[in-house]
Length: 255
Image 1 (tube, rainbow, N blue to C red):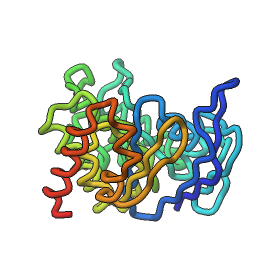
Image 2: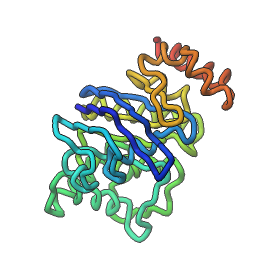
Image 3: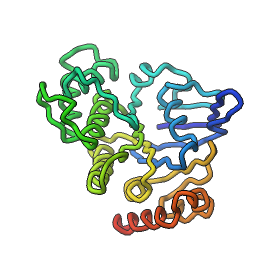
């Protein structure tokens, strides 16, 4: 579904992403991890059209999308969530999601946008009450709203940006299960950027690790979590507990 070759992004003299290549197969969940500043968000911004690559190719369903405008990328079937939810507070929950649906894959009618919003809200477990306000949502609710907005655009590929941030342990497990449900029931391919390795490892099919803008490891969760290069990268962020949590998650998943 997605083939990225030699992706580079420079900001002046700083190289944020350096010659990164990877593939994502249809129906797969790919985990994208790495320390702060490793280039994860920059890659997401290039995939979604917010940033234009300095060099490299991004093929989605066989068509080049590097440098294509964000609204056209959404129309082609790539949706994304954002790490920090920023809903329109003057709109209801339903209206926020319907608005995303309206600007999704070429929908040009309010009825189709509303239908997309109904389905997306039902999938993530949020109310379809047309008058329910955003202000009543907590951290978990706002993350669900982000997912619903992305789903309403009708994506083939979902870019999930730190869906676990600000959640407690129970909420994190529920959010991770939700991503797997979206893949299993809707057939949507997912790239998931996350810092919480333990939860991510029990859901994803493969993992790619970035450090200082370069890919340092890629493969099955069990292999990546024991890769000496990955362990070294996470030494500064309590690697022992992080990787132990990842191992526990694999055991829970029966890996």
